[in-house]
Image (cartoon, rainbow, N blue to C red; front, side, top):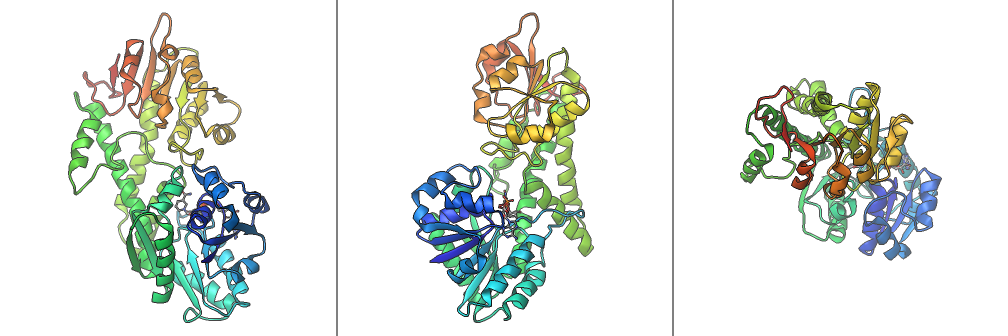
Length: 448
Ligand SMILES: NC(=O)c1ccc[n+]([C@@H]2O[C@H](COP(=O)([O-])OP(=O)(O)OC[C@H]3O[C@@H](n4cnc5c(N)ncnc54)[C@H](O)[C@@H]3O)[C@@H](O)[C@H]2O)c1
C-alpha cells in the first residue's frame, strides 16, 4: 500500500513511521524544508519515544519530498496532519488544512484513479463537510464519489506515547464521505494497529463532535478529581487519593484520569475544551460544563501559588520541578509547571527550575531571569522551597541528602505525592489533596 502524509510534525512523522513499520510505502510532505531534509536523512523530525528506532528499522519504506504532486500521484491515500491553532474565539482555525487540501486537490487534477484524502487534524464540527470538502472538490475539478473519497479521522494520542498509542488505540474514529472511503481507511487501520480497536464509522459532523467530546469528557474527569482535591485540602483527615481510588473502582466511572494533582495542559486538552464551549455557545446550547472544567483547571495554578505563598521563606530561590505538561515530552504548551514558575517570576521571586526534557522550551518561555538547575537534586539542593509539578519518575528518586538543610527544614509541596516517605525525616512534605488536620487556611497537610 502506498500512502502520503502532509505535515510531518508531532503526529505526522510518527504516523509515517508506524505505517512504514507495517509494510506500507510512505511519502511524507511538509512545507518546512528542514523537516523534509531530516526525514530524508533518516532523522526523526520530532523528539518522540520510539520514533527514531522505528525510522531506523523501516527507512527503506519512508521517503520525504517537497513535491506534493509527485507524492499524491504515487499514492492511493493522503493523510493531512497540519496545525489547527485556536483562533480568538476558541475555535480551531482550518487555514492550514484548507491550504493543504487545496494543494492536494490541484495535484489530483493529474490523477484519474481513485484517491482518498483523510483529515487527521482536529477540526470544528462542520469543517470537513463544509470548507474542506469545497476546497478539495473545486481544486480537484470533481465531486466526492467514484474517484474521490474524503474521511475525517482524528488520532487519540498523548505526546510521549504517540507510537504506542497509534499502534494500540482504544478506538478508530472515521467520518466518511461514503462506504468506499470508509472501507479503505478501515483497511489501513486494520494493518497499522497491533490490537483490534473498536471502530466507529459515521458522518463527518458526528466524528468531528465525537473527537472533541472525548477530550472534553476526559478533562471534565480531571477537573472533577481536582475539585475533590481542593475539598480534601480543607476537610480534616481527608485524602484525595483514597477517595478517588474508591470512586474510580465504580465501573461506571473508572480510575483513569481521576487523579487529584495539577491541572491538565498540552496542545489538545485545554483548547478542545474551550472549542467545545465555543461551539455550544455558537449553537445557542449551554456550555457551563465545559466552562466550569476550564475554570477549575485554571484555578489549580492559583491553588499551588497559594500553598507556596503560605510557606515561602528565605532568600534562596523557589525550586520548580517539572515544566513539561506531562512526563516523556519536552512540550510546555499550557503547562501548569511553567505557569507557576512564570507567576513566581512576575511576583519578583527568584526561581530555579528543572525538567529532564523541557528546559530548552521553558528557558525560551521564561526568559533569563529563571535559573536552570543541572539535575533534579541540584534544583532541590539550591532551593528554599520546592514544588513538584510534573510526575517524572526520577523526581521520586532524588537522593535524601539533597533535601537536608542545616538549622531549618526544607518545605516540599508535592502535587503528585511521589516524594518517598523517608524525606519527611529531613524536610516538611506538603501533599495537596490531603486534609488539614487543623483546618489551616491554605488547607494542605504538612507531613514531616
Ligand atoms: N500534538 C498532539 O498532542 C495532538 C493530539 C491530537 C491531535 N492533534 C492535532 O493534530 C494536528 C497536527 O498537530 P501536530 O502536533 O502534529 O502539529 P505540529 O505543529 O507538530 O506539526 C505540523 C506540521 O505541519 C507542517 N505544515 C503546516 N502547514 C502545512 C501545509 N499547509 N502543508 C504542509 N505541511 C504543513 C508544519 O511544518 C509541521 O511540520 C493538529 O490539528 C492537532 O490539533 C495533535
